[in-house]
Image (cartoon, rainbow, N blue to C red):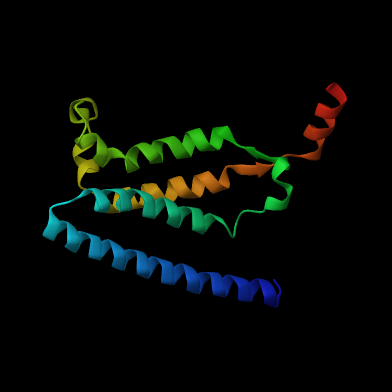
Length: 150
């Protein structure tokens, strides 16, 4: 590993830590405003979107695709369905509480999912990481075979 890569990772770590600290401060302020205004929707949306953003930013240094060759990107649907969909369902489980359909009767471990903020945050990180990590570059052989057929 050369110096530029090490320096880039250190800068990324500092920026990522600052984002986490700022994000938790914003969440704390939203909780205070929610107790004053009795308006829970900003806290609810933030608690869903912030972990996804954290997971996506966590995956960017590991992703090896470049956006310059955007025509050569593909989505790994297996990875997205196996890891992404279950983590999204766990992340959105507090929203099911407000729905008309009683999910607590169908899922035996619903009590574990309703009030567990750490589990929701972790599920959001996994979902955001999976979104970025499921984007792969197409191999050159796939492009050549498509040109030969078409």
